[in-house]
Image (cartoon, rainbow, N blue to C red; front, side):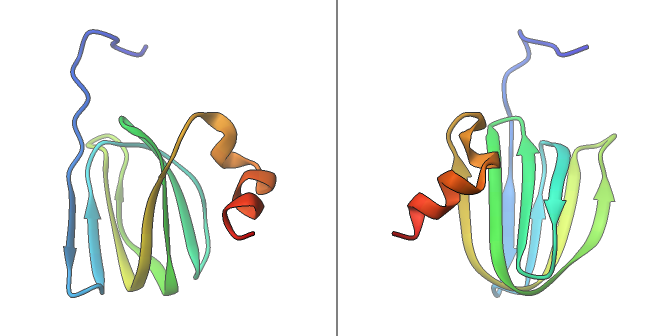
Length: 92
């Protein structure tokens, strides 16, 4: 059950572009060594970089920690972010 009256809350903490701690994560949609797609309380969030891997995952608390070299953190508007067409448009 989703609580609609609860205020959205998310924190992102990055240390030296090598460790990223994210709260407010509801689901991990996909991930590999170059890209993570996370569903958060504030929308879909993409993390891109090199040699990325998940250090911590606790969806009950909404916490994810990612290690590797972080190049980009981007919020995607709406559900469009899941399709490769939208991602392809970003790199035209």
